[in-house]
Amino acid sequence: MTFEATPLNDWNARQYLRFEDERTRPARDLLAQVPLQQARRVVDLGCGPGNSTELLVERFPDATVTGVDASKDMLRMARERLPRCVFVEADIANWIPREPLDLVFANAVLQWVPNHQGVMARVLEALPEGGVLAVQMPDNTREPSHACIREVARREPWAKSLASAEAARPDLPSPESYYDLLKPLCRRIEIWHTVYEHVMDGPKAIVEWFKGSTLLPYLSALDASTANDFLEAYTAEIARHYPPRFDGQILLRFPRLFVVATR
Image (tube, rainbow, N blue to C red; front, side, top):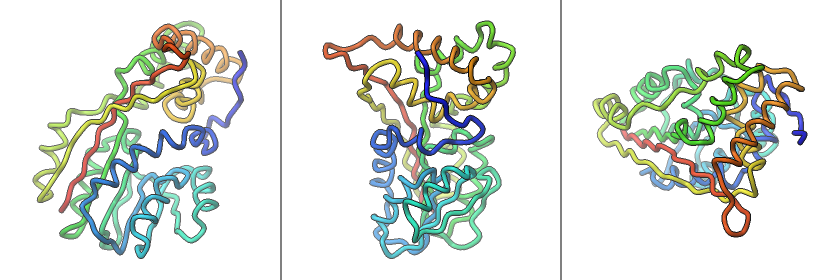
């Protein structure tokens, strides 16, 4: 089995959008719980290729919507998709609002940011009264999809090269820790989990999904040939842990954590 090569030194927008409908669904669910009837200034933090930004433009057509991301490839595609929006390249770990914002929307990005809880607190504290911080993060590091990555990464000949890759995506803290951190800074906070069951075509489809996200730190540490061998071994583990249903399809269980805080 040979996998299509993708650039490994940056987020690849085309790979990420191979599952656009599934990746955008949590953004829709998060936006549905944002308690704003209108907004003037909105920031999509970690906007990626603009799929979540597009939702914000549709929800708040009179607002100035700005996308922020660190990936040049993601920003390139976002600008092509939404040429009337402003997109800014910036390190989310150090980003802070420079003007009063009605909404900061962070869909599936903060789990990658070191000390993301500190970032959330800093951004929330910078919002004016009534401003909203809306965050969604995958909470799936203990799922078989991720346990299989770690198990294969500890094998030879990959163990030495991938020794530090696991640290790129730690487990999320408990919901209680978000509450204790953020509630003193806001008048209302909502926290919940949703578990999605994505219907996938087979083991390779699951591998292709995570090639656009979780596998990136692992693949970037390997050359093309070694990376392909790693993906073949990972695919075999996925097939063992995700048996097909009656029609040959596979269900990918995918928990996500949601936080909506209103100043």
